[in-house]
Image (tube, rainbow, N blue to C red; front, side):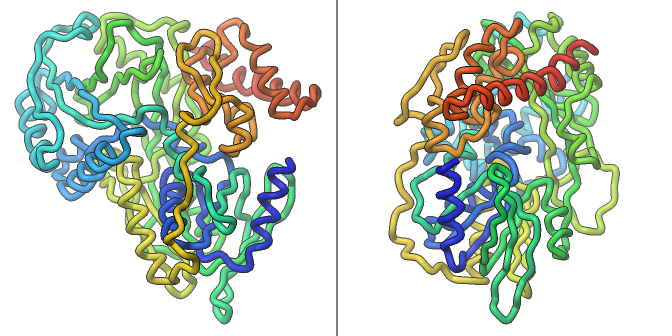
Length: 503
């Protein structure tokens, strides 16, 4: 807690920030990095853990949006393809190229001829920077398919580690003293004082209970699915709003022979379902469902599981058992629409273009939509809007520092049943703002996604190991460690065990 006190004290000593960013998902994180490098005094506030919302529930794909061609949304596909190729070229440590296999439908829009034609158009829009699409009839995964068929091979990008660590790396570089990112620090109010040209913001530190006051020339709302709520609280009007799409993946034990991500055509809504190898598991999904209640949207239901198992049985020649379900991933995707938008459109029919709205009278910028693939482009656009409102006040020629978040320059440790090694929890506490057991198991590592029952193991065989992690978190306080562990076990019982019992 001493480290936290030091962080809050450092924030309080800054007379005025140039920019305050609300939200520590992929949009806020990437923008924070860019503004810091451009010399802005920047504070980022995240009410939960960094990357703890939608940004932790992706398929780890960095893709150009092949399916968006169904609506002839060529500008979006061009922008996402360009972003994908730039990330593959310049972020080799984080992003790699990957061959995907598309399994077309027998008839309709997603059958072989239309899809292969779309893939060549996709290849053209991407300026031929990815491998040319090809037809393959023989491949290792074919033995698992319910019916034999050709596959269409095309190239996209994939994150090497996880979406959470990708978000984290934008935030955890060594910064100057007036550039801070705080997780578990929630914006609770504030007002804009036009004569001063400053926002006076009130934040609540959820770890210490301390109230924090700060001032900033510009505020950027990168709250993701909560953007509209934040604007409403701060009395900001915008020409845009969000509609929400819920997506659920099952983490299943990976068939030994599966090497490539598989994309299965779905006749319903002309959509697809994915089977993506990730470490020792395969991500199967996602569902695609319009929701209005954000909190409920982040909850996996038995209907979600039943639907995904039904789709698995439809496409694959084996049915997963309960013991094959290792984990769940559930996210709510914010889709940007005009404020007067009212429709029951299928989520895939809504444009994936992001929107950036500026209220110049109050120096408030709101970000809508966005994807991991286009995070750098979105950050550049949003930073340009900030630049129109205020200049940087620091020497932007000073480098931000070395990136320690990849895990390569830190002590590592193994976890039972896993081949991969992970950063130690002590290192994550000191360098990556790790505050809770869930932070470590879910977002600093992949343990809770790759080991049954969120790392506890099928029969709680890893309970003592998790207890040792809690002891480190608590600084050796056995009572606090036991409380942390019990809270985690209760969460596993409510969000995993009870669901499996009901299916």
